[in-house]
Length: 344
Image (cartoon, rainbow, N blue to C red; front, top):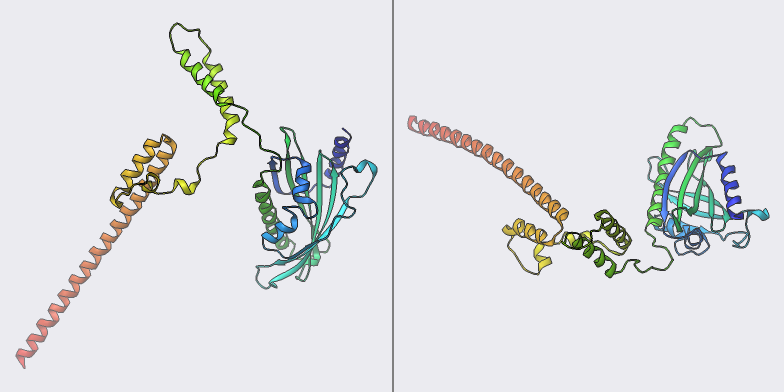
């Protein structure tokens, strides 16, 4: 409760200077706030900011260690200052009338509230580029416990473009900087969304026997001479069981689904039988949605091919007419040449 009280107080203070730009609205992750810190924020983390920035194309990324070092036993109730570090790097630039690269620096402040939440405040400054001395960019990475998942956390990111000097290019700077930071945090969101989390895999909470019992209950509902069971109760049981089993069931990859039917079945079929064999394969697979999508896709391909054939036919007719015209012109020229020879 002490952590939560301090977290609420901190959030209330930051709302007084709330950033209007939202880079990440809300991402739910399957691990705790402490796991997020250990995986991404701490020095030499597996998926640290240094590694992430290098992966997305930043050059010569160099991050200092957190000072003072993070101590999970210390919180802000002790009035300790937040940990601080700097990240120096070279940012590639793809813009007209600008240098190919620019030096930049991120100064980060880490506010820790134990298992309840954390806030990573960053101030980004760009050097060696005209007009970059007119502004800085402040952003806040919020990570807090998920109320709907005791083992999960929620990530949000906001930022603000703060001008320290007046400039006539304010609107241009705002638009370009906003796009850059939305791209940066969008890639960061994709990276953390791909993480599975360090916590242990849990066994499915529904056993095969429970699912079979539910199905048998449905069968018994329609048998004569047996006690009636409300169908809604059975359906609810099956739905609940399937929802708990669904995370453990992996769908086939798109690469597997896009394989030719003859590759999946192990048999070869001529190209002319592609449509028939595809329809037969997916119809027998029992996946009605996949069957409809496949048939629709093949019909679209056939329609496009038919349009191409019709266009080629029209072009051939035009070419044939032109050849006939050329033949008639040649015939007229030959007749005139014959007449001139006779006169001579």
